[in-house]
Amino acid sequence: MGDTIEKRLEKLGVSLPAAAAPAANYVPFSTTGNLLFTAGQLPLKDGKLQASGLLGRDVDTAAGREAAKLCAVNILAQAKAALGDLERIVRIIKITAFVASAPGFTEQHLVANGASDFLAEVLGERGKHARSAVGTASLPLNAAVEIEAIIEIA
Image (cartoon, rainbow, N blue to C red; front, side, top):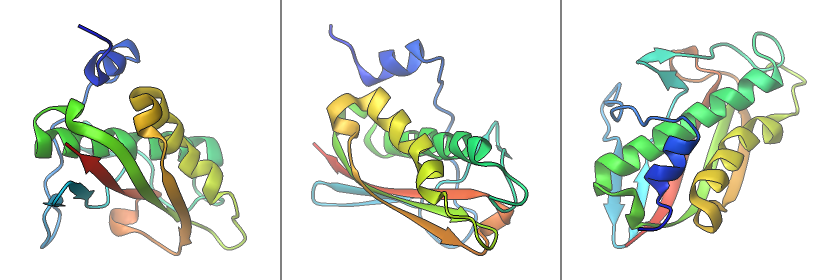
């Protein structure tokens, strides 16, 4: 058997957590046709928020990149919950990274690279995607980063 997504995650020392339950009145993912949409994923690890506050004030860019990577891990956890098998991922079409930013912070794109780099490393060509990186005044639960994804599935 070839190199699977699960094997690449294992090689990277990444264990997917149980998919996070919604924190309000929404579903964690939804599908239509061959598309899977994830709700925004926060930088949670072991059920705890790992980065809070504003980039450029409370959180530096390097820590923001790590937070974005955790969001991507949680996107894959939602995909596994939705699909049962990550090999059903045809490709990541687009991610949108929301970065809680202090006034004057302009490195949202560098923060979002934490997720983009991780998805490309784990999924290879299937992980290359279009992306938006948006600065925002605040995010739910005072999270520093939140990322949503659109995924083509088989």
